Image (spheres, rainbow, N blue to C red):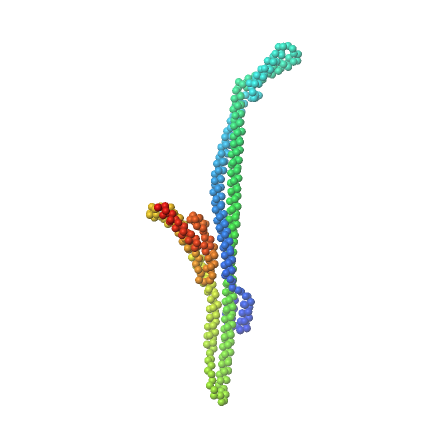
Length: 453
């Protein structure tokens, strides 16, 4: 309803106002239930917290994998150095082998012999046999020519063998064969070292793939957390819009009802004035013989009736605005609660992270559990501050807050683990956690007394 329409309500008749009221009532806008919104937001917040805890666990695993991959990289680097050194040794053997081949070619370039001494003996023996055949004279002319050709060939071979022996080629051959054997043996060692390096590299690739897989899971959960936070904001925005629509609907309806009541009061006042005039005329006509005393009738003027109607409308308008003021007060209370929770969390974080400095007396005593006791006291103070405060606006909220799931920072898990106390998950577990921390603090004092005795 616009401002112009609201101002025009005073000039409408009762029938027109009733029509406007019926049209507004057809909208049937109901008040949104805050409990339903809180329940839905609590589900979203629970999912956010669960995903946050899972991400924290996965991040620890990623850190473990990264520490492992650093160790694997060091081993791979060492294995690679071994492969490079072994490859250099193999190359040196092969260079020596090539150098021996060059030495052989420089001193001798003819036919090579595996056993030059044996070859020389065989040739000398064959040469003597052929000479004996020629001296015997029992061969034909053709055979004699063949024997002479063979003798010439043997003489040439004997000359080559002798040249081979005189050049000391066999020593160079032995040296070459030695380098060749060393290269073959070291080639097996190089293959083993390369296999070790390859296996380490495959292990590194598996760890990298595992880290990438975990990182993808963390990113997916972060995306879900972001979506849930956006859904929470949408729910809050939708609730506020519905509440604004309901308040506008009630305001319009109250204005129309006030206008109807004001119009009815004016109509009654006009009717009453008309009846009063008629009554005065009839009272002036006193019947004859009627001496009975007349009853006094308290007559209200039109101004008094209008004043009463105005007061009644003011009371109704005041009652209509009560709901808006209550909602505004509740919103302000929730805002202050969030502010104090944030201040408390910052104070606890500062207290836990900055431990007090030791005095000279404490340094002299050298209490081995001093850090643990300080940490216990700080954790007790943090748990005390995390206890939910009761709201004076809404009933039944205290019971729900006891079931509220707590949100912890990542370093708090390590602090509770260091003192050996289970971290509280729900608000109702805070009292038991505080008692456990106090018992742990007492046990530290007992241990110090026993050690001093």
